[in-house]
Image 1 (cartoon, rainbow, N blue to C red):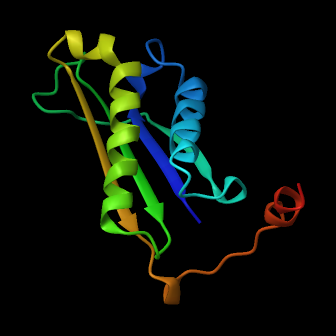
Image 2: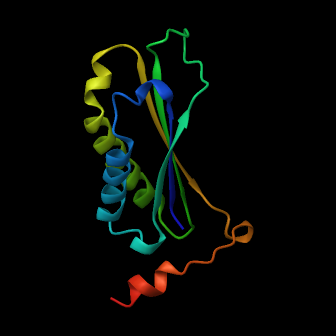
Length: 128
C-alpha cells in the first residue's frame, strides 16, 4: 500500500504542473520494480496558509511523504527515495535558481498491525 503525498505552498501553482509532477513520481516509483501498480497512489495537496523561513512572499516549499508497507530492505527504500528525489529535483530545477525554495522527502514504513486495506483495483490489474 504505497501512498505518496505531496504538500506544497500555494505560490507554486503558477510555476509547477502538479498533475505532471504526480505522474512523474508514479512512473519513477513504478520503475524501481518494488511496488505493484494497483497499490500505488500519488496525490498533491495545496497549502493555502503557510509561513516559510523568513516569511518572504516568494518563499515556497514542496514536501513529499512516502508511506510504504513492510517487507522492503532499507537499501531498496533508500534507492527508491534517491530515484524520486533526483527526478523531482530535476523537474523542479528552475525553482532552485532562486534562494526561495525548499524540497524534502521522507519515507515511512506502515505498521501492518495498525493498517487496514480493501482494494478492488488489484484483481483487475493482476488479471492482465
